[in-house]
Image 1 (tube, one colour):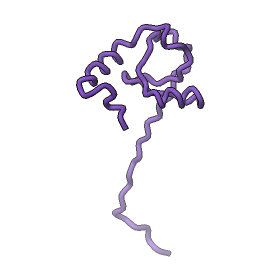
Image 2: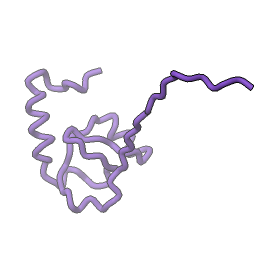
Image 3: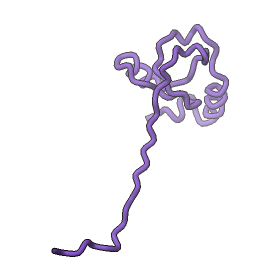
Image 4: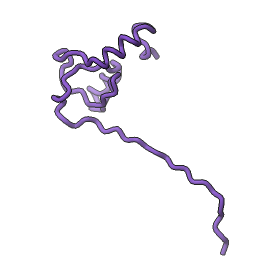
Length: 90
């Protein structure tokens, strides 16, 4: 019987899972900035999106009915200094 090897290493893989907001969304009545292609994909697949401000959710309401999220607007205005579609250009 052979002896187990000693001196090996063990790596820990940390995985962060982001769960979409499953609430009604009434607590956050803002329109958020999201990449258009991601919003279109979400409409087709029901997949969650991530707004500029970091909010993760599945959009289900007409964003035109709500005021713009102040954090998203602030971030978009700051990014506007780099061009109208930065960093969303591919």
